[in-house]
Length: 83
Image (cartoon, rainbow, N blue to C red):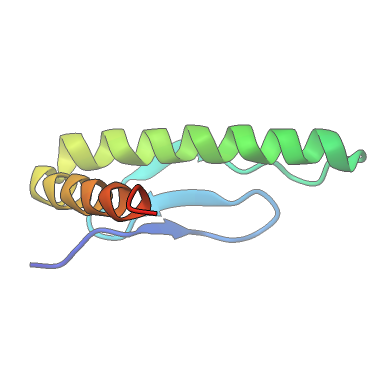
């Protein structure tokens, strides 16, 4: 079974879509901002919104892949706390 991936259209304002069902996500990465500090904040907020929307898309449109991703995240968290 093919796995969905978060894909980007590239360009000055990246648009993202699901590689499996080609559904476009509403979140976009911001273009350049004059002050670097403001730009870093904008990028961090955009990434958070994009990943949240991607998680919602996987849960709604691809439940099997969503379950697999949740299991992978749980394993990663378990390995990180064994320091």
